[in-house]
Amino acid sequence: MDDSGQAPYLPAFIDKMKKRGLSPTVIDTFVYYYKLLVKGETGLVCEEDVTPIGADEFPDVSTLASYEKVGRTAYENAVMIVLNGGLGTSMGLSGAKSLIEVKDGRSFLEITLNQAARQGIKLCFMNSFNTHQDTLEAVDRLNSVDPPLYFLQNKFPKILREDLSPACWPQDPHLEWNPPGHGDIYTALYSSGTLERLLGQGITYAFISNSDNLGATLDDALLGYFVENRFPFMMEISQRGPLDVKGGHLVRLNTGQLILREIAQCPERDLETFQNIHYHCFFNTNNIWLNLEALKELLRKEAMVRLPMILNPKPLDPRDASSPAVYQIETAMGSAISLFQGATAVKVGKNRFLPVKTTDDLLVIRSDRYLLTEDYRLVPNPETQTVNIAVKLDPKFFGKIDQFDSRFPDRVPSLIECESLTVEGDVRFEANVTVRGNVKIINRKPKQAVIKEGTIIEKDLVL
Image 1 (cartoon, one colour):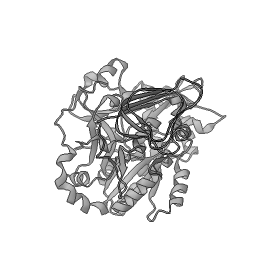
Image 2 (spheres, helix red, strand yellow):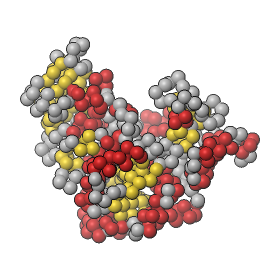
Image 3 (spheres, rainbow, N blue to C red):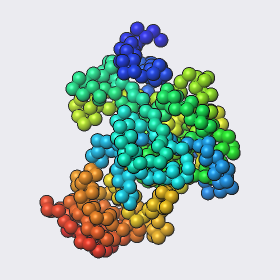
Image 4 (tube, one colour):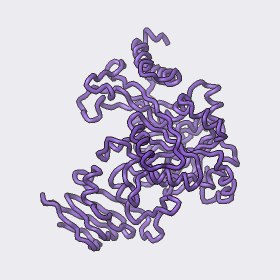
């Protein structure tokens, strides 16, 4: 490509990134994706180009118990890498989401630190430029005996959709940049020097998960299966349900190659099939197992990690829909499955996928449906009497974490016998409330309604 002709703004992007001190590898990676954008690449993966994953194509974790001993002996060569770049903006926070109190008075961060310490596993956080300082200060307050390693997620400049020039926002220059998605982990591991540091310590196997998913633990059987079979890359997948229709799913290209397809990569005409949970049966939990030697070899051969591009259209200021329209170039961590010869997947239960994206999710995790064990694992309560639960809290009164906490000031309701709970209007719950079956609670009055201590709710309630 003639950069001065077809991509006249490329030198401006390169200069902007150099001034921010970004490494040559990061700059080269952005240039690669920017050139794809200028050529007209959309990153879309059409339905006619893929085939679904078969129901019995990959083993289930329940069949891998024989690998547990191998897994335990591999602890000294393993690291748990936690993606800790997210802000809790959807829940009204401006700091690291991992600092939210999630279970028994403890935050995601505190539980993860204790979990790794109990297992004797090396812990490493990939922070973003938004969460790094918050995380350092929180770990310091918690007096961690074995402080974790840290490395920073990179950032890409936002691109004006109008002419593909660098976005400029003098009133808040911070908003001119975006995190490039969790697919950046591979470049960030390398460019930060963390990859070499881990390998130098004899660490070969990495388990990678999101900070808001406490179901994602370093499992002995999965580690042993990964080690014994010498896989370069392994993705945990789970059966899709009605709530998983928008999640990225694993498919094969018609060539037979495994790929991850995110909803942002799906053409609009294919959305119905994309969301058909009986046709595309397995979604990516974003729990990934990676052989660090395999990653080093890939980088030796290719110089950069070329993942499928996700082109995310956004307003420049996410809080101002009238701000200039931009593209954010992003990538997905799981899409690296297409880059490693011999990469595989394993089926896991929903107990390994418990993300907290909204206060609806937070209510379920804080409730008695889940227990925090002595070794800091979040496990389903064996006394739970319903298979699934659907919670929908009125976002006007429960959507932000401070609103949520003020309406559950003592203890969240018991939900072990609950199948669905919908709350409409302003309602405050006192301690020891129990919800059973399918319940809708409605308050249409301007004044806050109160559910008294010890109340048992078994049918719809209009206050």
